[in-house]
Image (cartoon, rainbow, N blue to C red; front, side):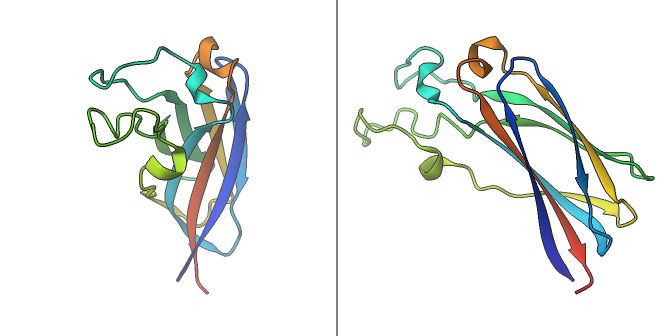
Length: 155
């Protein structure tokens, strides 16, 4: 069996936005085997919140909630929160110069799909995303959510 992926991208710019979307699953899919969901700011993330010193732990930004459901027997098969990458990676590490800023491509967490098993009879996956960032982040920056659905074929 061969694994393939379908990527859906949502761009959010309004606070407290709800976004409904659909993902068509090809007919040759045997079953859906995994789901990944990531988020990233479109604007400059440094303009949000206060600057902190090296000894303060900061919570990672919560982008929102994601629900996926099929129209067949499985119904809702995935729910999860989408968060920003870990911003506390270099907390209290004094070997790093104070001018160094963590970047998404240097400090992003390893992305792995969460395992789900949904029958291949599913032809459409319905999704609902709910923004939880609030006015202060979404209106200033905007952000992008990527939902990756992995499926297996008989090739």
